Image (cartoon, rainbow, N blue to C red; front, side):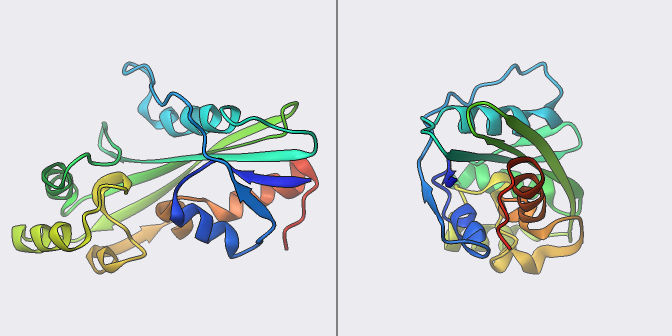
Length: 188
């Protein structure tokens, strides 16, 4: 079996490389729209499935799709489009506990297993200067919720409950379970 990572995210690639180098990246061009009235906690799993199924699957290939969002109360925060939007998101997340939800989908074209993983992250109260300095230095427009816990924004985090790698963008433990239990692919 050949593994395909349906993502252009360098962080997802780095996380998967922690357990195997035996995969290729094949970026999905899936439509990432969703019904705005749906339960927002289900959006990442829906988008992960769209991404996985948006990649051409050859014989003997298994595709991994993933999507990560931040839910603060009932508001979904994806990737900010601009630095100003990133500043606004971080101001909303300051002094909160919010959910980071990653949807994951693994498919071989016949069998498809999807799941979502939730991690609770608490950020301390952030000053406007801290937020503006962080955004101007790191331009986190490629990160859901406008922060990278694995980078300097980790200094904002007072508590995490759940899978750290889920917050980075790929729930590694759950992925390895699915590959082993449902596709008989043992990575470790």
